[in-house]
Image (cartoon, rainbow, N blue to C red):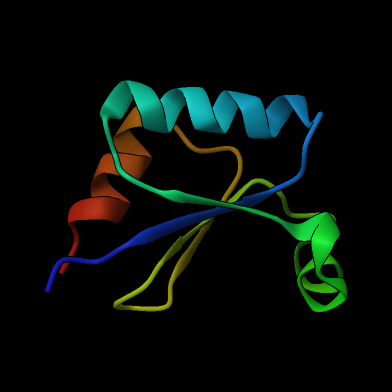
Length: 77
């Protein structure tokens, strides 16, 4: 089963918007989760967002990330 990806961020976060644009450009499917709606997620990610999470390995990629780092993160085994 291929991994799924979650992007943790918040609305009106310019870095989160940049991360979304990069993921969209790469056509990497992801689910966007707003950390402002969950106290536990807010506490965990508050100063790290945007953060890309990979479901199968539970690894996370903190901003800043680039096309190359996202592709490597998405394809590693």
